[in-house]
Length: 625
Image (cartoon, rainbow, N blue to C red):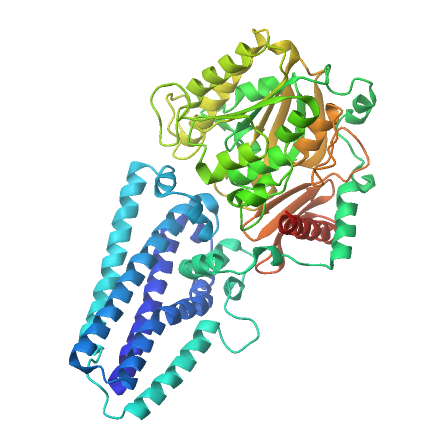
């Protein structure tokens, strides 16, 4: 009996030690961030992290414990004992491979996602995940995975060989009773104790510094808890339905007295009979620029501006100065722009084809109300995160990607480079300019994405160089269109899918991380204008349709920025939290820890209520689709 308990205890302790070592390796890998904190803070990540380490180790140990219990209750014989040993070892080999994969993927992705790994990684194929890594990073990841797996398998094999008994216990009833008691204790450990709250990620949060909280999270637990995390739609219920509806209505439609300080003459222009556009039915071209946050477009490298073309074009455009991206991922940003629907903290509605198809969309409205033909261009694989299904189901007539485009040159890991795709897109735009058919064309760029492989070298920083490359492509695109017959009726909208964490020390959930530019230019624009209202990426839909004298009642999360009578604020979500900013300040709220983790200015309470109402109504709307 004693040997069985020692075996179970060793498996449990060894598993916890593996997690402790992984945390140490992870902190060393991210030494630039962990080095900003003292030894006491780092030590607390291990102490608090033990809660989820123990819970996860309990799950791992449950199979060997059940095997011991089966051996104690049944007369399996010597052969049966060997079979049980093989089953247990097979389980521990699987655990080793799985946990090592989770750890390796998490360590690589945290740099870009700034949150511990969750089940959303399953949206991406292995090729798509590797596409963001350089050859060196890929080799390092493989070496790390193999080393971690081998170490775990070796230790588990030693424990099984020398400590796992195969013979039947002499006192079967007493042995089974002790093992049942051990199982009960293990269940308590898995559950996270006897308190009403079961084990969850929030139990290891102990600081306002989110990096420290993330360091304490067990990545395997994080992945499994989101994979089997229950009903996502009920996670963010802060108010009763009637109260939530009232707060949401006040947030979206209330008078903007608190935001009366305007940087622009947008209201006076909106009052003009012609509005912002000289034609109500322009040829609309939306260029969704991968990752072009304001910290990138305003950056300087080697004494040169990173995005000189966007800066130059801003002077001739309707320029939105205080716009905020809805999320930090392309699939969510695309839905925010084209459907006027906010991003979700820990899910992507684009993954649910049935619900995504029921969203409103600019394409569907333009086609139904104004007879527009609609096209979407992407130099990569449009099947990425169900993008093709979303586009076709929300009204796009054509989706052209690398599989349907002619050979445009050498492909990078993500697809054709932006310069080649731009020429193809402009040819299609110019070619259809005289056919009398109003059109919506959308192009999603890709070259300014990790690993930043582009066919030119202007700046020494490879990240900024990739953005500079796409900026140059945008500049050439505008000049080609300006010289064509398409320009006079053209409304060209330049807007990113999300921002980018540059410089690397800005917080992943901060306003700076989500601040993005948006420019409207082309022959259809009446005159240049600076719009200084705080706004969200989701406001593109209502603003565009409003300028075209089309109803946007189907877009409840979108506001027409050319008109008064609505609150002016920017809103974004990140992994299990949201941020909101207006003229009085900014508030960043983390749902896991239930605390404000970033604040500036005044009126935190008002912004917090608004953000919670928006988040709750987002999921109520998803449930109803």
